[in-house]
Length: 469
Image (cartoon, rainbow, N blue to C red):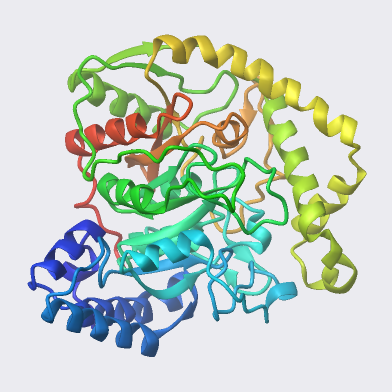
């Protein structure tokens, strides 16, 4: 049986205890593997685990400490990698039958950097097919469930990583985010999720070097752990043409003083229907930051659902471009929504796709003057708490009787605008499901979103909340 005290250590806490000789890496990794065995039959958050290899690496980490060797910032700490991110010698399926036997020859740079820091990969976490969905349900691995209520989704597409962190399996997990896939599950599962500025962390393994939507980011229990992930994994690196230079100087833990900051607040981005509990928790989080010394400025963005439509069009073209060649052989084993997206993407002309960029431009021209006078924008991460696992995310979209847009995700806008965005827990719904506050920074200002997140974590701690597993 796993030990809760070990299961719910943060990565920075665990690493410090290991360096001091107060915690055995072998004990920590063995506990992580035991916890996975306990919860994975219910949650389905891991598709692969590597117990023998992980324990051997933990023993080697223990020997290094005993020998007084120099060790990295994550030495001996168990982590998980999303089953979208290539891992050398380890099957990486993208949640699809089309890749069920693919074994990459190299680690992605983000994996390499985490390993170089001493982290021990104990397993790979579930993702929907080709990271398409805001739920985590793939034809190959099935449904992944929310630790707070298994009838509900943990979100997606990094839902396995979020569930693994919240359930106490690992303190830190890698995710990827092209339209919210780190922040969505962070909000629905009740943890921290960072989408850095586009290009901050190399994302080098796509067939194209000209995509700026896709970002790696951490799922973690604390803002300090998210900051550590950014510190270790950031670029620049010539293998990704988008990577930003120079590297940031990231404090771990980040400063948490928000006195003097001016923060814009938008509850609905101008057009969403917002769940009452989500709104109440967002306002409570903003009030807590105001009490900590920030100035809150309510703003009207006036955006519309045309933004969502443009992003979904782009996402369909992305899917068709990079994975559509698998339709001929694997169509019958692909998720129907993935097939439909690919087929729509194939119909779109290059001219039609480029026209959608005017929508992003108009949105930026509205947000830009707000961020010129405000240090960040606060809004909900998701318009609703985690829905049930059978939620039809595409079928549910549309306008309600008041003309408000009904949709779950309030995240893809900030991928399109290349902005850093952090989701941190904002509270719980009346049904006991987590909600998230999204903190969106100025261009390239990843440090301020971490600072604001740290301030909220200090003002309204969330780590004492654990799911009833």
